[in-house]
Amino acid sequence: MKRVIAVLLLISVIFALTACRFNYMTPEEIAASMDDIAGRIGDSQITEDGNLIGNRTLDKDAYSGTYASDCKDCTDRDVVFGGGSIEERKLKVSGRIQTDSGEALIRVRMNEDVFFLDCSEDGTFESTLSLSSGGNYIMVVYEDFTGTVEMTCEYADSASNG
Image 1 (cartoon, rainbow, N blue to C red):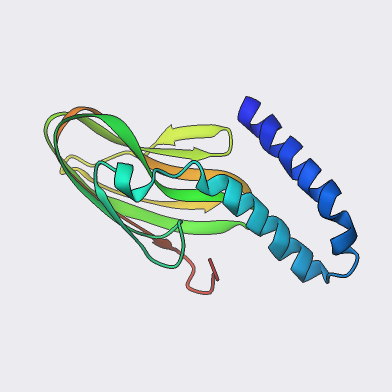
Image 2: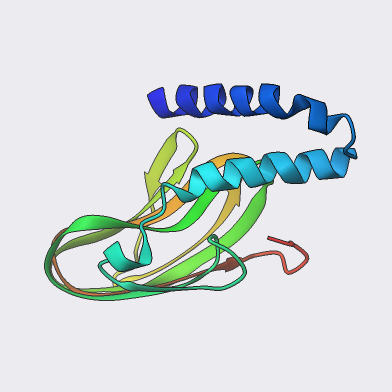
């Protein structure tokens, strides 16, 4: 909750400092500018490539791509996909977790709502997420995990501009 308040305060200050510039912008340019600000703030929550347990390849943006890890006794988490935005998005998340020991879970945070994706008996998972504006993140949580994780995140609607 403190982060949300801090982000809103920061956006308010930025808006106040740049309000004069908005007088000369179209509504589309204002929306793009605000989305850019939200995106920059949201990017700070994503695990940097050099700090990932696994390997990520991004596609269109930080919301889509592939991720793979091969772990031995890992306990940590990778915030793999997502960010902050004023745009709504629809994503399809799928993959497989092969567990030798421990546990790996796919955790989704959509603003204040947090839940875990269910895996089938063979370790596969698939879900379509409707992300509203705000902070949305897909992560892998490892607890003494040995095994592999493969995940793909792509736009569910090909008409989406991401």
